[in-house]
Image (cartoon, rainbow, N blue to C red; front, side, top):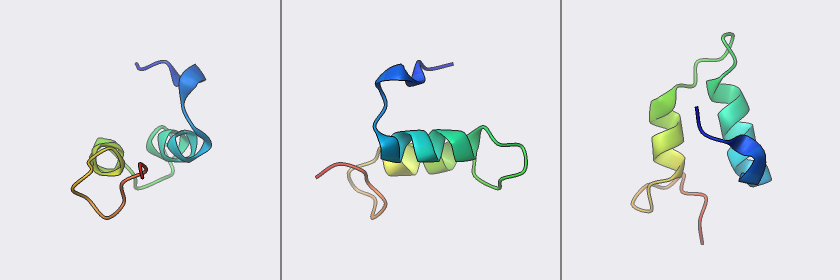
Length: 44
């Protein structure tokens, strides 16, 4: 499991959603937020 200590607040929000068994988010959502070709990208 990745170390969450150096994640930004936005990343932590996604990470907590992914790791919440009551949430529909999954690793596809994590990949989407880290893909610069995706509209949900966290970067600039």
